[in-house]
Image (cartoon, rainbow, N blue to C red; front, top):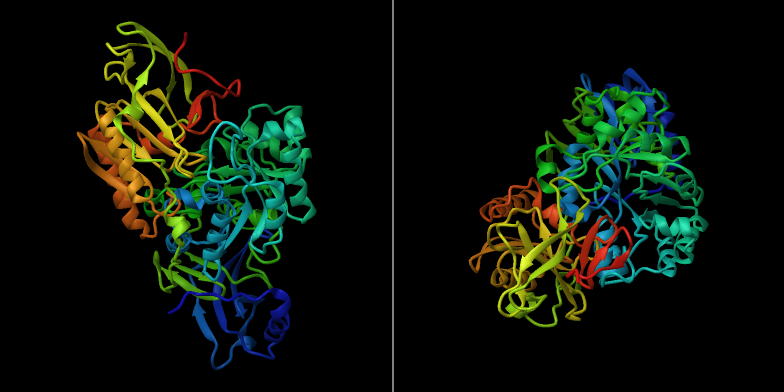
Amino acid sequence: MSGQVTRQPLYEVGPELVATATGREPADVVIRSGRLVNVITAEILDGLDVAVRSGRIALCGDASKCIGKDTEVIDAEGFYLVPGFLDGHLHIESSMVTVSRFAKAVLPCGTTAVFMDPHEIANVLGMDGIRLMIEEGRNLPLKVYATMPSCVPAAPGFEDTGAELTPDDIREAMTWDEIVGLGEMMNFPGVLAGDPDVQRKIAETLKAGKVVTGHYASPDLGPNLSAYASSGIVSDHESVTWQESLAKLRLGMYAKLREGSGWRDIKATVKSYTETGIDPRRIVLVTDDVHPDTLLSLGHVNHVVRRAIQEGTPPLVAIQMATINAAECFGMSHDLGSITPGKCADILFIRDLACPRPEKVMADGRIVAEDGRMVVEFPLHDYPEYATGSVHLARPLTGDDFRIKAGLPGKRVRIRVMQVTDGQAVTKHIEAELPSDGDGEIHASRDEDLAKVAVIERHKGTGKMALGFVKGFGLKCGAVASTVAHDSHNLLVVGMDDRDMVVAANTLAEAGGGMTVVKDGKVLAILPLPIAGLMSDKPVEEVQSSVEGLAQAWKALGCDLASPFMTMALLSLPVIPELRITNRGLVDVTEFRFTPLVIG
């Protein structure tokens, strides 16, 4: 059965819904005798029917008069009827699969709508990349809405990206139907300083009547937080303590509590509700970044709901956080978030609210998944050549490109080093000493756990690159490379051996991007991500198999970090303290300035 969807707005089908609800015309589908979870009134209503017409709900109550000879009747006895889950903030690119493949993975988990921020592809392909993902999201059973990326590049002047988005681009995007607001405003210092470019982006969004979403990664909960909110920013997903979440809620913001693959904040942040008893209707559950293994082993938004419940949130409240709260945050509650008349018929059939994995998933009035599997098909999206050929190096790399001449022959050289910690986004800015050889060159050191790191511009083939050192990966040999390198997604290489670094970098250039591990000149594992160097069009299961191969290859090099590629991918993000590296050089993020590798 085809899973392509043609949705009609309420103003077009309203008369049909009225005719069905009054019994004059039959429903397309009637769900009988379910336990309806009403997220508006926080009630569970036993034995109700739901009548569906043209993909929307016409009636909740006794639907016996709505049944005609062609009406499909579904017996829901024993099931709770729950609104489809909404993900209020995520980057689909982080799943490493396309929108269509992502939809096939999350619909069986009960996610029926997402509000994506296509920030990653925007850094590579700009407006064209955003359009490609929006176009792919059309006519899927999964409703795909987008916020317009606000900070491309994330750190102007400190890195070279594939694109730059201006206030004029924001104004244009606000005319697109699928754009529901402005993506996470990471440049909170720019908001506080009154940066004209930032102010214009916010203003263009507000003038369009759409929402501005936030990214306030600061523990400062005083006047600066009020100033940030007063600019018109309505939500934030960066809280890591319950005090931060509570402070934002008290200022009228939506607090988005995050539980994904790398950021597991629910345990701490949900206490803003469970330990205070405040009204939770402005708390939204989100994933932010979810990798294939999480989708396959734990689920999607249903996993976040389960985690909130495990931490003491009543099931009905947790479901509100993943449905009506998210819809209201984006001004979409007229279409989404509840099982009430007029809304899209996105309904989950769940036996146990405390363990919300649906047995059936209805989207737009049709069952699209059962028992964890899709039961409808929809075509995959073909990406154009410019999207699958986004890795442009000035020339193939050689060993000379990775040499670091940093001192007089035979002398010890003091250098600045990024130190990583497993499971943390921040790096420490430390110092170390290395001996120089007879040519004045310094090398990676197994004894000191110091690996070389390189970032090579890969969007326009400029040849700009920078070299440095990183501590904490525990590598004993070999090299690793990735074109998933936040946020500019240049070619990032970490290694103990220059020759292996060459092989890793050139292998990814030839593959059109992805991730790879190399030892003794041989490729141990590779995950091709040819779409913008970020995504694959293969099924999630196939991508996860390659990810597992990469994990084993990392271990073969001596690394025992839980998620080394995620840790590595953040080395080039010059908006998180303390020390980072871009293709232009080392960045002291606490001072927001370039700093030399060698301390002279």
